[in-house]
Amino acid sequence: DVMNKQRETIYDIRRSILEGKDQKEYVLSISEDIAGEFVDLYCPRNEHPAQWDMTQLGNELLNQYGVELKNLVPNPESAGREELAGALIDGVKNRYEEKEKQFGSEMMRWLERHIILDIVDGQWKDHLLTLDHLKEGIGLRGYGQKDPLVEFKKEAFLLFEDMMNRIDTETVRFLYLMQPARPEEQAERIERKQRRSQQELQ
Image (cartoon, rainbow, N blue to C red):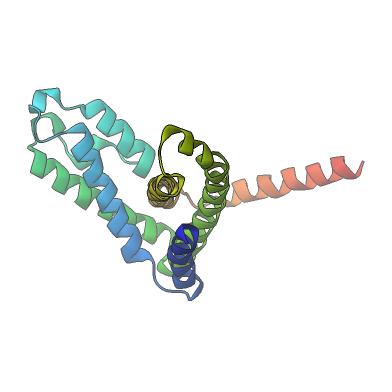
């Protein structure tokens, strides 16, 4: 029953993609959420700005979106928390619009659907494997005076939440960091492939 409920959620996402629904709003929404989470994590409200970890915030932005913190906020050390959060959210939104201009709207919509589908499928397969391992070992909880079914539901829910978070972060990372291949790079790739094929034949 737990697995069926999770399967329904995943299949709803897949159905939306396979029906060709526009995923841009979803991508922008999770991009903004992740940027907001970075601010919460590295610039907590209950800490003095001098204690904020601006270095790690900058590293995360570079790894996730391929953007430099200083390009979004010229003086991040002197910016207030709200100003910082607003600048990051606007910055990642603008970055995505630039990416769309690079690839063209039609190609971007196609890439969104294919990348999300690949990531969802890969993460779901891994999740099912993890749930199988969880099922195998859950009976041992009975020895610790815990109800194995309650424990399974609790842990399966946490694993599912983790998987959904990974789907979001991986989707954003792939879409923001991808670059159009230059003709010479494509030619080199084709040449390498042909050389490999010849070696295998030999």
